[in-house]
Amino acid sequence: MPPDCCRMKKPTLFIVFLTVFIDVVGFSIIFPLFPAMLDYYLALEGEDSLIGSLVAWLGKFTGGDKNAVATLFGGVLGSLYGVLQFVFAPIWGAYSDRHGRRPTLVFTLGGIVLANLIWVFAGSFALLVLGRVLGGIMAGNISAASAVAADITPGKERASGMILIGVALGLGFILGPAIGGLAYSWQLVEGGEASAGLALHPFSGPAIIALGIAAVNWALVIFRLSESLPPEKREQPPAKRGFNPFAQLRRIHLPGVPPTNLMYFAYWCAFSSVEFTVTFFATETLKFTPLDIAWMFVFIGVSLIFFQGGVARQLIKRVGERRTALFGVCSTLPGFLIIGNATSTEMLYGGLLLMTSGSGMTMPSLNSLVSRYTPGDRQGLSLGVFRSLGSLSRAIGPITGGLLYWKFDNSMPFWVGAAFLIVPFFMMLGLPPVHDHDKPIAVNGEQ
Image (tube, rainbow, N blue to C red; front, side, top):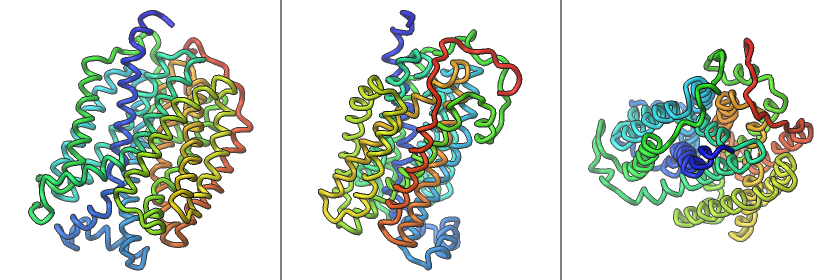
């Protein structure tokens, strides 16, 4: 690795970590607030408002069950953010291949700051939706951030950079809800004193924390991030653009990339379904309080750090990414089953430990694989499609889990999630060997 790259590696990877973490926190910080948000905005704006129409529409699918409506309401808002990230991740990734990582991140992180500012003053449900839309569009920059990590880590060390991305993803997805739940106690304005329109509201506390983290990240990118993709290594000629990530996936004719992307999609569909419903399961079955839920997420976060930052790194060095991912799936599957049948706190935590160990091994392995299958001048596009499929799965998972939970049985999401993991397991057995791309390859015509 050149000396200049070595000097920039550590601060750059920290900025990448923070960017990915903020993207996922922006998606998940709102999870524990959904029931309270539903009650607040519905009482404030009435049944004839936008949120009133949404609740009436959801009520048709649930028979008026309030808990089911609250779950699906959360799923819809979460899916909105995830679908937009799904669409825009390959767009921002391909843009960064052509114009550079730094300008892409500067622009999109500025948009995330603005989205969180809108949330701070979202006194109406329409403003809340506007902030979520803008945040979802700009959070597609997770592809450009991932490409930065790929740019500054050579092929055989790629797993280390991707493990950092995996840690940021896991922590953001787990600590986001914990931050949201704890910050909700910081009430800047009481519900009865709040007003509709551009104004503070009972959820401004979590929004201010999200705004502060995003602003720090934006400043670091502006003042400390160096460009990791020099002009001579950028994509020539530009790939065909489009708003269809599946079309972009078909244009990447690289052995190993499509199946790895689809495995990532299948795994995250199952994982996000379980992650979304485990809070409801613990509350209903084990009578967990909000404080118990917060400690549960802390346990998951610490476990993820240990398995992604320690165990996965050593396993990948010794047995490679494919076998490490297989170990991860084999650990996640029984974890889901134990959680769904837990009758005690100890049993629940045992299942969570297996689940987090599996995720900690699977996510960075798949991340590293898709990056190592891809030449340097197409990292942004390839990782953009990879991340967009993860975003789509995080949009599908919560709604699917919520429907299974309330329509059938509170253990059903965990059984279905475990069964669904069989798909990525068998797909991994057919992956091709990794051949590192030390130099960008010429691109002729369509990718």
